Every structure is written in C-alpha cells, then in structure tokens.
Length: 158
Length: 145
Image 1 (spheres, rainbow over the protein chains, first blue to last red):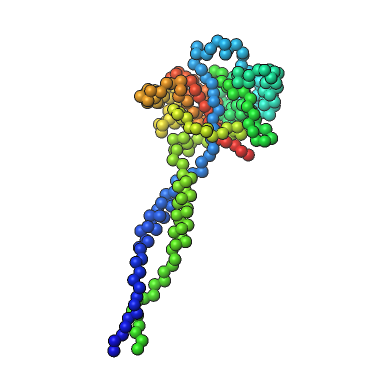
Image 2 (cartoon, rainbow over the protein chains, first blue to last red):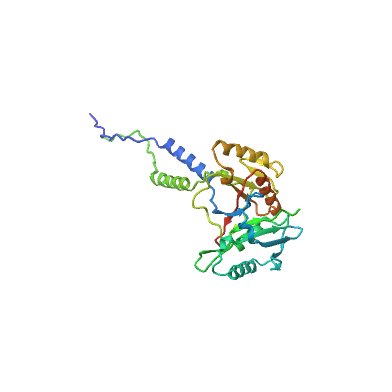
C-alpha cells in the first residue's frame, strides 16, 4: 500500500541566533556606556594680560566684591565696595541692581566691571554663586535679566 | 493506516516582539550616547548655577582644564599641578601654532570641582596668563530647580 506523505511546505527560516547575540551585545554596550548628559554652561572671565588694556576702558573703577571664608572654606561674609551683605546672595544681587539703577538709564551696563577678591581657601562653589548673583537673574517669565558680565579676579590671596 | 510522524514537536516562541523591543532600546541608547568624553571628568563635580545655558555653538579652539577637589589639574588626560601646568599648556600652544590659531582666540575653559579652593582656580588662571592665554570661562552645571 502506498502511503502519501503530506506535502510539507518548505519553510526558509533564517537562523536568528547570531543576530540576536550581536543585538544583545550592542544593547549591553550601550547600557554600560550610557551616561546622562548634564547641561553645562560658562561664565566668561575677563583677564587681560598686564599692559594690554586700553586706557579709556580703565577710567571707570570696577566694583570690588570681597568674599571671606572660614578655616573650612565656608563663606563667612560678602561685601560689595566695603558694604557688608552678610552671606546673602539675594542682598548682593539687590545691591548690584541698585548700583546699575543709580548709573542711570543712559549708562551702558556692559561697561560696568566687577573685581572678585576671595580668600584663598574659599570653596569654588561660593564664588560661582556670587558670580551668578552679579551676572543676572531670572524674572517671573524665566527670562534671564543680565546685570554685570565683565568679571575679573583680583590677585590671589595666600 | 495511521503513519506516525517521526518529527519531534518543537515549541518555538515568537521572537518578533522581543527583537522589536531590543532594537528600540538600542536606537534609544544610540541617540542618547555622549561621545564627548574630553568635556567631562569623573573627578570633577561642577558647582550649580541658575543662569548658565549650554552654548549655542561649540567653542572653536577650547582648552579644557579639569580641576579636581584636591587641586590637581587634568589636561588632555594628563595630570598636572599648578607648578607643572605650564608644561601641558606649552604642548597645547604648539598644537595651536600648527593650526595657525592666534593665542588670544583660544578660550581656556576651567571645569573646577565645587569644593576646590577658589585660590587654586585663580592660580591656574595666573599660570595660563603667564603662557599668554587671555580668554577664560568658568564652567558650571545648569540648575533649573
């Protein structure tokens, strides 16, 4: 008796194993090297070489921002042109706004300079906070209102 | 007459959704991967600032100095102190000269750890000035809180 075999449809099945292996290797590589990118930005610091500044720019004396630190590098006082502001950055910002207001509407804010004079051991983050306070602020609409952007450092105190 | 098939039954799972998901994950990580390793360093934790914004276009000729909490400076993968930094800066200067870049156009980006002494950052600026660099930028992390 003749038995007819069912006509089996030939299936062309690809071997997926090697592809899945590579895909998983790629996935592991990307997961291991993944690092969340933090948004960073810069504060420009104006430090011209000695003798290279133009005389007309130097007519206006810069504001003097003095930052004092304790033995551990913590901020103990902020003073702007010898006005003591405690350790309050908002007061510092308010004082800067006051200075710019007193300059009058015709004055150019970009010509205003500030010299940051810090104790040697003051932690850098306090300096950045002070620079942030003098550099500007964000208004109610989250727009940056620029204040003084011409920032220099005094000679380091040892 | 019943003829038994000799083929064993293979339980084949459908791999399609898994492969779809895996490719999507790969695409996600590929898009987000950051290859700019030179712009970051594990030893540096930047201070926060509410005002800084990522620059709209990257600096053309930057020199990035990473300053660790202990004051060590990392420049192009090599470690320096304030005293030895001039050696590294001279190396960078020679690279800039071969590219016909004027030194005043070069911006020195200082990525200082938030706990480093501010005086050390000032010393680094002084060391750069001694090598005729004039443009500086202090880098901070954007704080949107």
